[in-house]
Amino acid sequence: MLQLFRKNMVFNNLLLIPYILIVHSGKFFVNYGQIHLDHSWLTDQLILWSGLSDNAQFYVSLIILFVDALLLNQLVNDHKLNPDGQLFAGLVFIILTGFHPVFSGLTGLLIGSMFYILALRAVSNTYLMKNASLSIFNFGFYSGVATLFYTTYLWLIVLGIFGLIVFRGLSFRELMQMISGLVCVAILLAMFLYVKQLSTIYFADQYASLFSPYPLAMKFGGSGLVSFVIIMILFIAALLQFSVFQIKTHIGAQKVYDFLFWACLISLFAVMFVKIDNIAPLLILIMPLSVLLAVILAKIRNLLLAETLHVFFAILALFLQLQNW
Image 1: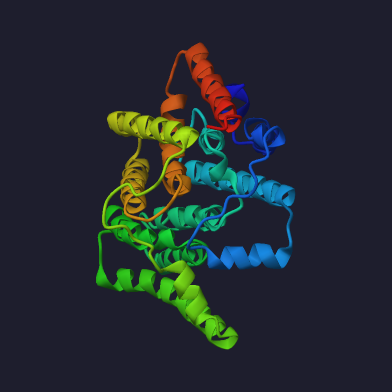
Image 2 (image 1 turned 180 degrees about the horizontal axis):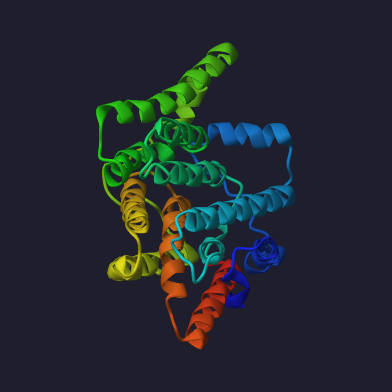
């Protein structure tokens, strides 16, 4: 099956649609209901305004997952990160988000994920650009939009600073360009809240009791704990295989790999100090981690072993969705 996703062709990309339906089919057998996350007031209002049923929200979330998978594949192909598995990043992303139903719930976290990946692409594209003002501004703008939907995406500003250091060397002018993108979103939000007289409600929901003074404040159910452990093991495995990403790759790709490692580390750190009652924010870690794991998968020369690992984790994802621990 992996052979179907080694080449970046339209038909192969479309195959991700039935793949999502299979890997995330637990919803068809177990009714989880819709997951609600704190600090996502705007998303709650949009869902309430749209009047979407639980089933409709599930299908919308699958569409967003498909878009995320396509964006991750574009990130890989734009920088030629994985010639031997051009669509593996989207494939791995779909599997990792299948480890727990909370990752595929229609939440502000999931909606903001599209803008998160767009932000990653924007800053990655600045390498060797003579004038990268627009891409740097876009990073700040996308980060701001993602934060509207889920407050924890504020950490993207920290990542943006590291991105500028990795790709261009940090300069005050470009830092201000990045911040100006975020400020534009903040101004538009402030105008909307002022007109609608919703400022108090918005800030009480989005920012009140957001941060935790101690690490790892999230609460685990049985399947949540298993999913967390698996994702952490995969993250450590990618970290230990760092040298794999530096072998026979051009400098531009090496810089993207460095940036994605920073994205993993900073996102994990950000999630640890937020008051949350489930593992949903690990989605922020899953996105860059999917690219790294996809490269490792593509570099396995034993095709039978690679396919076995792929099928094992896909079945494991579906198994975890069917549990009620």
